[in-house]
Image (tube, rainbow, N blue to C red; front, side, top):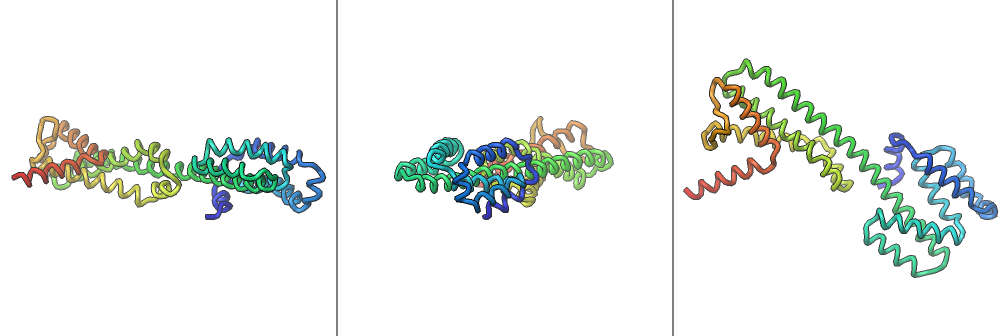
Length: 282
C-alpha cells in the first residue's frame, strides 16, 4: 500500500497544524550553509516542498532533513524518536530499534536507523489519521441506520392503528422493533469496536454489507421471538398476549421484547438452544 496515496486521500480533509511546519522550518534553518551547498539538490527539493503545506510534503521534508543532519543532530533526533517510538509503536518494534542503535556508533549507521524510524513513525501516524477518517464514516452510517429504524417505527405506529390482523400488524411491529434494537446495539457498541479495531477491521465495519447483515440478524431474531410468543412456547405476565385486538399494553410489550431480541445477539440463539434441548429430553 502506497503511503503517499493514503496521505493524499485525507490531507485535504484534516486541518494541518501550522506548528509542524514551523518546527520543520526551524530544523531546516539550523542546517549549516556548507551542508546545504554540498547537498544543493536536497536543498532545492525541500524549499519547493515548503511552498505547499500538506501532510505529504511535510513528511517528505522530514525524511530529507535526516540526510542533512550533522552527528550531534542525528544523536539528538534519534534519542527523541526512540521515545516517540516507545509510546506509539509496537513493543517488539521499539525493542528492535533500541538494540540496533547500540550495534554501531558511526553517524551514517545511526542516520540510516533514524531514516527508517522516521518512516515507521510516519506510517503509524498516517494509519492513525486514516483510522479516524474511517471511524467518522462508520459512525455516520450507523447513525443513519438508527435514524431510519426510528422513523420506520414511528411510521409503523401510525399504520398499526389501522391494522388489526396478526398476519400483518404484529409481524410488521416485530420486524421494525427488531431493526430498531439491532441498530441501537450497533450504535452503543460502536465506540468500543472502533477503539479496539485495527485498520482492516475498520474497513469491514465501514462496509454496507456488515451493517445490513447486523440489521437483518436483528430483524430475523425479532420475528422468531414473536412466533415463540404467538405459539405459546413462551408465556408469562411480562409477555404480550397476541390477539386480533391487541391492547396498548400488549403492543408495548411486543415492541419491548422484539427490540430486546434485535438488540441482543444471544437472546434468541439461547432460546432456540433451550427449546432444542427440551425436545431432545422428551
